[in-house]
Image 1 (cartoon, one colour):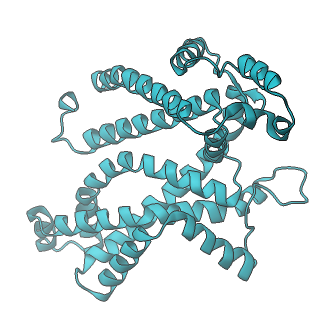
Image 2 (image 1 turned 180 degrees about the horizontal axis):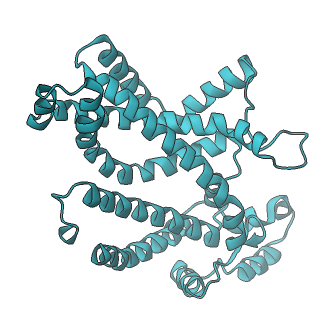
Length: 322
């Protein structure tokens, strides 16, 4: 396990270097002017000399390779730079928002895994039944639905039509303090929408895995010994059928981040994903590079954890060969 972690950490270094370099290269080719985004409406009445001076102060007149190298060396020393968009240190921007994005993604991911496992087992219990067809049909329909469409539909139904849940934000409009009760109410819709966007994958994978496990000899032997159907499903078929799902967990991290980006934008959730959109449109080089590096790191950690769990749960897999 230690060797696997060491190899993955070493391979992560060039990956992160390429990712950060690509961010600066793409941002340099962007048609958006970071100086005008920084100055806002004041740029409309400013003369060219003032804009050039501001461009020099921000360092955006340098080649993107020089900006990337300056940011990289500063980041290795613990200085992530200063956000030109939010006028704050990048570390402070991330620190204030990361906790809310982590809460949203953790709740949504847990709900998707638990709900997908339950629905997948119900569908696999009797292949071809009405329950199986219904669950599979809903899963395929949700898989094809864009997450922002589901988010807008949820706002219309639960916030505007029924009025049972808030449409967005972190707390109530008139509230001056953040309370757990308000956060929980405001979390229901964005976490629910994000969970629904991930639910079909887990449902279909569990259905397939448990269905295949039910046809294996050990499960048939358990039924022949007179074990109850619940014991056969949960103690034998589910344990064997969940192994492919573990690998899916790591691969779903990028999709989870993308979905969180759209969900946070729709529901005005003060997380890190919504800030990524603002940083990209404003060509905020330091903030954009830090956020992209953070997302890439999350993907690498997700895949590493999935491999570790797979190796620990399946004795046939050798971690030294992964």
